[in-house]
Image (cartoon, rainbow, N blue to C red):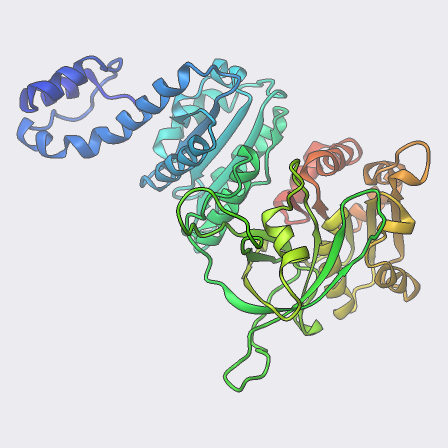
Length: 491
């Protein structure tokens, strides 16, 4: 963000000499001024509000320059009202608390040279008008978007701000996501849409910031409005597995006014459970005396008609032997019958698409989200389903085996590919099965199929995406994404 020299000159006439001297040291290069200079008396009253974003940006830039471009995380924003800029500041504060240097710049300040020097980029962008970019991104759109840059070295996360009441919801964010993907950049996370400042979506962004920074125990920016659910069942599905234990959990909703279990709580296949964990017995949390612990997110693997909310949780063990904050609470510390703080977050970017044919691809605990979609398809009588699922060993890690094999036997899964990577000398993953079935994939897509991917962002999701690019081509994959026929819930 640059200010014209003329504006600095007018301001110096009315500001105290100490402030004037400081500003004189940080003048930006001039650019044409199309409006009359504002009176000095008015400027003295308003100067702090005009200049504070610029000063914050400059301080951020100077503090991070010494760290070097390779380590620094670049935060780019495009803001019409200032909301995206304030979120950029919150993002930088989170990274700073984690010890990661960062730099905040408007999109107009991004250059090809800067993008070439940057390894990780976080973008927070608004959409204005009929799907347009904010003013502080207009130069980026005119000068950079037409360029064929090679950005294969770049990892990117994108937060798109919008309002669903408008027809071009988050259009500029989606435009940027396409552009960076076509230039070879790889996602740190899938694009996150924020509908009119939705706090749940912002918590989802903070969740990814925690994964990126390794600083996952910072309190949420906004605490979820939890309900009190009950942990009813917990079962380890893979005892003696080569991998970490995976648990199937069942929770029942809070009781209604009549004392019976509430029956008005609903969700859709693809939605997320936000869990409020409690500290492990005897565990001291660093920081404040009683910090609110951050939420943890899990794909819901059941439907409301099943009578309870079901999860598939892998128990995370840290290097020091302690268990993960959320997975430890759910799989080891919480007792059966104990109250669990839980909030359901709508995830419309992963709701069941209205397609006659559905291809479901995932690995590990990603089966949870796919299972809910399959349950939905069975409930609505849609039989053209194809599941491609991968884990380590069939004898140990075939989660929900009876469900899947029953669906296959009853004709709900006419196509089923299972990839257990440790069951043969050469590792075989879901992307290999997908490539082997390229002809069938192309045939299903011609018949209007949709694709759902759920599971690991690193490894599986990237390899599946590349396979889809190789088989279907970039243009078709873009069309599928735009039409809501290629959806992902990856983590």
